[in-house]
Image (cartoon, rainbow, N blue to C red):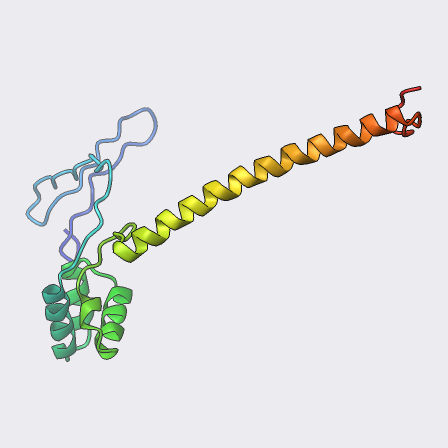
Length: 160
């Protein structure tokens, strides 16, 4: 046992031997191995407004050195989260302390009407753009036919 209360691992044989080192607890028993399984998809944590208020109150009440750090470690939080919660509280945004729903926002009646109007205008624009393209092709053909009938062929076509 060392002076800090931890035991050192068993010696590791050098050369052709095997690796038999085992981490041990303070009482000398082998320490349990951590679970090697990894969660397939991490789940985003959502904090309630009440939880945020409680953590902010505890952090504000902490007067001893290292007390806030201990609180953050215990709760599994980062100091940046605490700082952003404080800014929201100072700004008086009570609704900001409540958890926010992620993803696209649901449309209201006015937004649905605007969205439908946008889709209609987009369809009209696409239809008119296609008509313009076809009209330009027809005009190009008409120019070439007129040039052929007049007996003068433009040099770029290479005919005659």
